[in-house]
Image 1 (cartoon, rainbow, N blue to C red):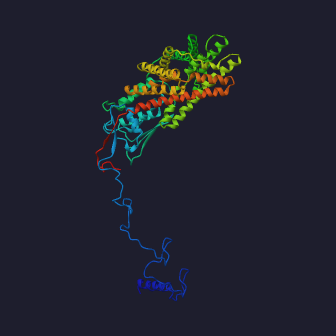
Image 2 (cartoon, rainbow, N blue to C red):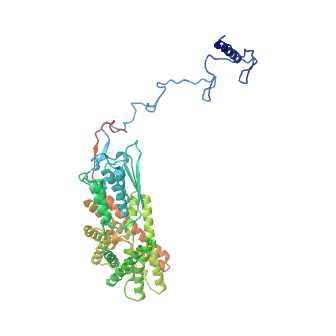
Image 3 (cartoon, rainbow, N blue to C red):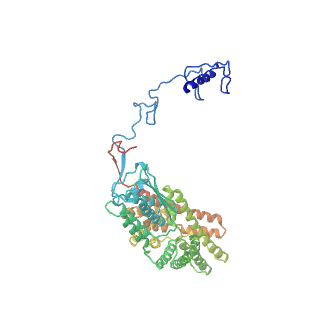
Length: 556
């Protein structure tokens, strides 16, 4: 007997044992007991699962035209006759085409405010080597430019617009810049299937140098001009020169400008020649003390605290010496030179344009500066009141109306404010005239029309923002040099002083009312400047054209 024939009977014996017909004594727990018959249903397997229907339950069988579908198959409820319009019409989607003769700020701002999928691609070729743009270096240049703009006090939206313009000038159209109070970041994704490249930079020091700010704007303007072939190396070289440039005014000019600003502000609130000289001396002394604290590395909070003391001390000293002079004018003039109007306007502008984190940080910075001023003035006023100085809070109700003198004083205040901001000499005259116009509008509405001071301030600040934005668009520059110094005459210096004086004399309710008025005036200035800027942008020329392209050439 062969080996195959020897295995065959064993197999039959095993099967007979499974059917219950075998008489073999060899069994196991898996063998059915003898006498138990199992009904067989053909040759189908007996295995089942919890998803199988129980026996005896009949379910209707639905026949489908396409038993196996995919993600690209039309749904069963689709009807071609009642289907909605196609996503991409045959004639093409309407695309926004911005006029090329408008400033780059308006073009980039308009693209940043529209959805990413609707932004037009760059039309000109990138200004780089033949093999394509060096993405890490372009992003680094973009961050360095954004750092200078943010450190100079530019608004977050304008900084993003500048960064977006630099990237697009080198052909990087899939860029997303992000700006916060101290952090800049930018992300570039070459395509939907490639990994993005991200870079960031931290702004650690900020200062007021509008000459450097204007130079950076000119660099961005040259990069955005398709007719100006500025390579990446040339852009780096110009950026290094901007960083190395010295301030346009020496230190003694800045100190003198601080004194003249305080003197002009004291004349605005009714002071005479003696008040002018006293306010100027106090502001210059405070400026030198602030420079000394800055050289020692003290934070800006203490610099503002120390700078606010000398004008208040001189006003109290004149009152104790019984000199016939308005001490309120001396102290108010010193406060005008310290109020952080630039940071306030930038903070409110960021909030109105949707950059709430940056706006909150800027306004918190303004609050710290203001608290420093309050502490410095309150300490001096408290000491003066205890020494017997008779300071009259009702002097705020007596305001001498000298239109010609006050207009000249407001223009002098704007001019000196522009010098303190390190503006270019070519912009000083324009901002001086803008500040004079602002005071004329405020005086006409407040004194002649007897309108609320908050409404008068908002209207004057609106004109400042409107004219500043128009001048910046005419010169393809930043609007800050034309607006920040012009709002100087509108700052709430007198309301702040009289509120602090009332608190020092234990009239807390009266002091809080005056400080609330000062806060309302400050918000009116910031909102008015931003509103005037937005009104000027309503005249932005945007042309809408049909992009003639087939559906398949653009994808989805």
